[in-house]
Every structure is written in C-alpha cells, then in structure tokens.
Length: 126
Image 1 (cartoon, rainbow, N blue to C red):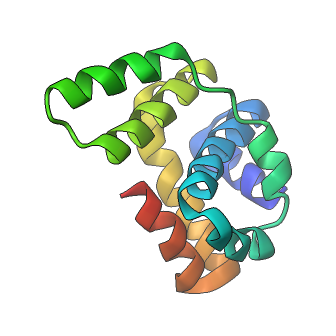
Image 2 (image 1 turned 135 degrees about the vertical axis):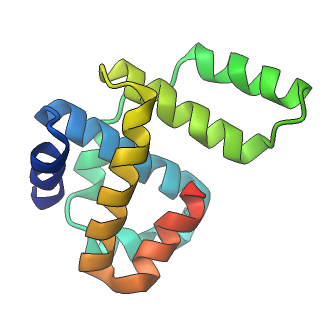
Image 3 (image 1 turned 60 degrees about the horizontal axis):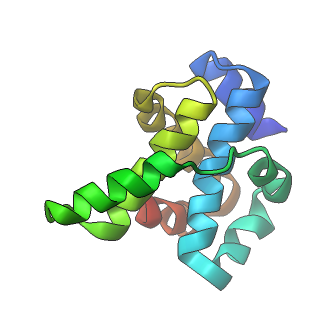
C-alpha cells in the first residue's frame, strides 16, 4: 500500500501504526462526509482495508467531549480531535503525531484525486 509505505518512511512509524493512523483519519472523514466519501474511496486505493486497521474509540473520548461541552469548547471539532488523539494513543503514538499524519494523508489524497479530494478530507479535519 503506497500510502502506508509513505507514512512509514516519512514518519518512522510501524506498519500497524501507519495503517491505524491513516484508518482513523479516513474513518473520521467517512463519518463526516457520508456519501461524499465515495469520491475519496474511488481514488485512494484500499481505504476499506486501511479503515479496518483503525482502533476502536474508547471511553476517554466521551468523557473529554462531555467536559469540553461544559466549558463551551466546540462540539464536533473537539469530538474529532479527541477521537483521533485517543485512537493514536491506542496505537502507541502521542497526540502530536496527529498533526504529522494529516499533511501526509492530505498530500497523498491530492496526488491521487487532486484538490477536490484533498479538500474533502481537509475540511473534515479543520
């Protein structure tokens, strides 16, 4: 898988971490984009297999989301960030790796599907 090899090489992560991290990003995009995700899946090979490698979310995300809402920190964006950070933690990666994975995935998406696909994913991650 080209994207996974790119993540392993550029970020120094394991195969499992590369697949899981990219899978978390694609799952988040699929959840937010709904039917529009087919535009992504049509040009990026193996998205289903990559998403299957993403760890399932845990209770910490719900707790943090609840605390964030009490303090008025924005719902969906916070939920997405917390979910990614929680998932990356389950892969043995610190939350700072989220900000390293995102540009790699976006660059790859652009190379496969142009600005349209890059922007679809990018808008979900903003």
